Image 1 (cartoon, rainbow, N blue to C red):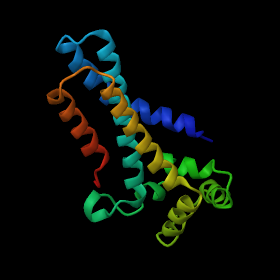
Image 2: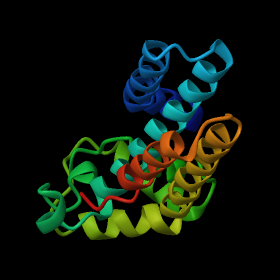
Image 3: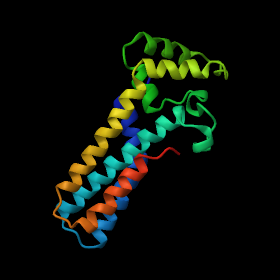
Image 4: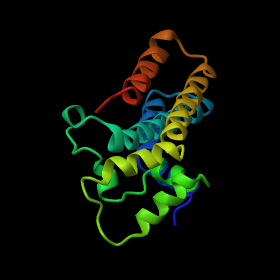
Length: 169
């Protein structure tokens, strides 16, 4: 069993770490002071985690014609993405039913997938993940606002954050 904290740590270690390093290296390259490098690294970490959360949502509810991935792809493979783990750990009847399905050795059929997606939603996995992605973007904004940087520097960073987390593919 994976806890929600472990799942978030894994997500942060993937895309969060990538964005964090990219932004921090850029700040170091231009000679930013250490406090600014730290704030920008936190910005990158928050944006990267928000990106991964959105990606996890798209892995279940993204439109195949937009994402290029098969419908309900993450559920088909019984991937324990953040929305699924949030649902599994919700303590709800839907979460318990989802856990029972995920423990089964047999693969999910095409007919079962929409039901499983509905269980994730009913157990709060969709809402929790959306709210956490929004929270991370707001934290990223606070990271930028804590800096004494010009609008010309902050605006492209913020626009990029909104772009990568507002995507539908």
